Every structure is written in C-alpha cells, then in structure tokens.
Amino acid sequence: MNILGIETFLKIAQLRSITGTAEELHLSQSTVSHRLKLLEEAIGEPLIIRSKGRRSIELTPRGQAFVPLAERWLLLAKDTERFQNGAIERSLTVASIDSINAFVLGPFYREIAGMPGHPLDLDVRTYQSFQVQEMVEKHEIDIGFLVRKHTSRTLIFRPIFQERHVLIGSLGEDESVLIDPRDLDPRYEVRANWSPDYLDWHNYYFDSSISPWVEVDTAALALNFFDNPKVWGIVPERAAALFRATAGLHVYRMPNPPPDRVCYQVEHRFPLENKRQAIDQFSSLLIAYLHKTGLRYP
Image (cartoon, rainbow, N blue to C red; front, side):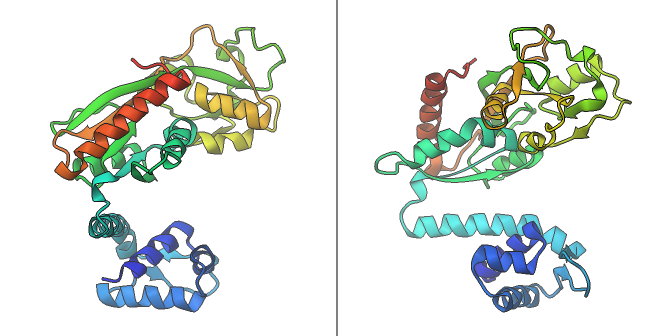
C-alpha cells in the first residue's frame, strides 16, 4: 500500500478538505484526488463521501474505521525508514494530551531538538488520554504522558510533576486577593475537565445543572473566550502563565483550590530492546529540565 496515499488520506481526514490538503502538502488538487483514488482501489472501498454542494469532506464508515489503522501504518513506515537509515536506536515517538504538550513539554521538546549532535530524534504526537495508553501498550509509541493513572499489567505509570490550578480572568487588578469561584456567576465560566480529581472537586463545589459560558476540551481553545470581562475559568498554572503573557489575563489564587494535577510518564513494562537507551536518555533529560524550570517533582 502506497505510503503517500496513506499520508494524503490522513491529512484529508484531519482537514476534511481536498483543497486544504493540497495546500498543506504543496500538491495540486488533482494529485491529491489521484492518490486517494489509488488508495481506495487498493482497499476496495470508498473512503470519502463524494457529494456536490458539500463544503467539507465526510468520511464513509469504512473511511472512519481506516483512520487508526492508517495512523499505525504511517508510524511503522517512519520506524522502518529510521531503521534503514541506522537511526532507529535514537528515535522516540512521544505522545501526550494537548494541555501537557502545549503548555508544559513543548519547550522541552524544542530544547532536545536544539541540542548539539541531535542526540534524540523525536516524533511528538497529541492524542486523547485513552489513545495514549492503548498505543503505549501496543508499542506504537514509546513514552506517553497522562493525568489519569490507570491499572495495567503491561504499563508503568511514573509521576513526574504536579501543578496547581489557578483562577484566571479580568476580575480585578489585585492578584493578591483570594477569590472563591463559588462567589462568581457560573454562567460565565469557561469550563474544562483537567483531570479526574479536578472533575470530582468541580462536581462537589458547583451545580452541574447550570450551563457554563462554554465547555472546552483543550486549554488552547479556552483562550478564545475571555473577551468578556465577566468570564472566568480555572486552569493549570502553566497554562495560566501563558494566558497572562499573551492575553493580559489576571491570575488569582483560591481559598479552597482543586487538588494539584499530577502528570504521569507512561512506559511499557517491557520496552522494545532497541529503544531502551533512548527512553532512559529522554527520561534523564526530562528530570533535569523539570528541576531547572521549577516544576515540582514528586
């Protein structure tokens, strides 16, 4: 099966647009359509719904089912290429949820990429929590980062840092004043589920029947909704620091804050033999980075 077709299909599935895919991959629309057609012929079934008047592409049921298989195929192809080039022993595929990748580990990945000699070849990915765990179990990724600790016979969950939750918004200039979020209007809350412990805390303190201003699934998305001065939200402190720097939001402490959010590094109990050295090197660099940047290490 043609790897270019796989890559093109995944981009179509992500963007839901032939035109957008062509622009993203610097190809003509006819080339994108031809690659997709060859892939569909190889599989024997259509992967997208072709209808006039639709602005966006829709996947067929078979197309939706093919997405995770295509992702695994692409990962295997990249590992095969690294093996052929003799670089497999220093390559690592790392995955996390959005808020950890975007606000905590992004600068660390950049630091590794800029190291002299390029000691590790990173492939960084963002997935939902359950996907990260499943892919580590299947050896499809080497290291994962989660805020949910699961029971598993094949995985090791190691706490690597914890961060507080803080209140953000434009609720006053004085950030030294403690603000109890229960005194705020819940209809103006930007709500997110940061961890199981956070969700338990939120359900205990707030009436879940009241609809918030908006409910989001990533911290990056939350930033779009603070143009109203009445809007407030609770976020992990690393995200709050970026919101303060980029959007001028204020950060406040709470008298009865949620439990700290703990991030776990997830590894397979029996890692691939040719990845052990790279995993150990990555872990050592990460611990040094967390100490250097002041993140608390349990």
